[in-house]
Each structure stands twice: as C-alpha cells, then as structure tokens.
Image 1: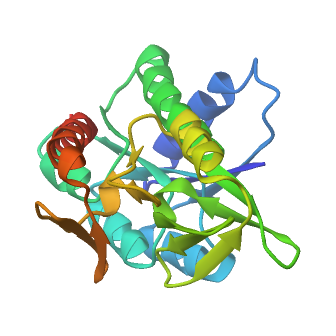
Image 2: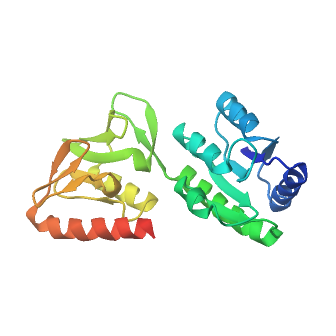
Image 3: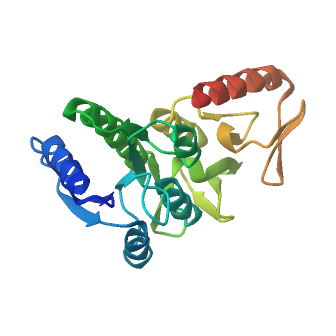
Length: 243
C-alpha cells in the first residue's frame, strides 16, 4: 500500500489535490491510503507518530511554517518520501529542490501536469524498491541490502566479505564473478573491480590514488593497469548521476 499525505491550509486545495491523486490511480490496481492535513504542524505530528509516507504533496506558503521547512524537518529524520511541492508561484523552486523534491507544480495545475509529476515519482519509487540484493549468509540465513549501502566486496578464499555502510560485514559463498554480474545487472556501471579480489561501489569512493582508493577509511589496492580505467569509469558514473 502507498501512503500518500496531502498538506494545504486551504480546504478547497486539499480537495483538488485529493481528486488529482484519485484520478491518477483510477486505472491502477495500486492500493493507496490518503491522509489530509490542514496545517504543517498537524502533518509533522502525524509524521513523527506514524512514520514515513511514500508520497507527500506539500503546499509551500502555509501559516506558521513553509512547506520547504516541513520537508527539511522530514529529511533531518531520514525521510525517503517523494515530495511534490505545489505553489502559486515558482519563487521557492530553488529551496524546494535543496530538500530533494521530486517535482514542483505551480497552481493552478492541469491533470496532465500532475500526472507527469506522479509518473516521475512512481518511477523513482519502483527503482528504489527494486535496487536491493539478497545475500545468502555463511552460517545460515539471508540478508537484504540496498545497493547504495554496499561499500565494497573483498574476496576471502571461497567466501566474499561485503562491507556495508552501517559498519557491518556480511559473508557469503557466492562466487566473486557471479556477485559482480548480479550487481551490474541491478545497477549498471556502479560497481567495478580495481584489482584482483575486490569489487567497489563507485558512489562510495572518497579518495582515488594511483595505487589505492579509500572508502570509509578502508584502503583498497588498485592494480597498475586498472588505475586509468577506474578514473574514467568513476567520472563517467559521477557526472551521469548528477545530470
């Protein structure tokens, strides 16, 4: 089920946004739950009590607290909600995208404009939910990890040690070549081998030197013949990501 929040201090606008949401999902089997809020504090109280939403439609100019400040408060609590701002002007667009808004819609809007924004949001949600990998652990059990949380993989004989963003280390018997292939299929271009026995997440690299790379204070050796290739792939990945 998708949890959708709508926050606007004008009741008529709440109704307009709710109708737009219902229209968007009218031909979709996706189950949704819509929560409506008349002011920013009411929304934040519910957000803190009930947990994160999947999609949040936020008016910007509300009494007492701007929508951009609401979004900043959400992000400070690690919210991954897809936020769409709605405003009568575009003067807050820069502030909106500084809190990683998915879209900015100027009122009044058409259903087509709203649908285009929602298409972007739904694609982002689909990608986020599909960018996971399941590891079968040495000693039994399985663990699911977000692709972006994997820092690097180090080969340890027949086992592979997976270093994760939270400091934990997982161990699996999956062959290194097979693991590399799986990571590539989930997120093309994001992982590369800097030398024998390692796979690294390009987005996790802090330092690149001619003989090593650094990821969260771990120094990983770079083969002489791989340095230039690593550099090229790193910059290609980073610039493509920022576009």
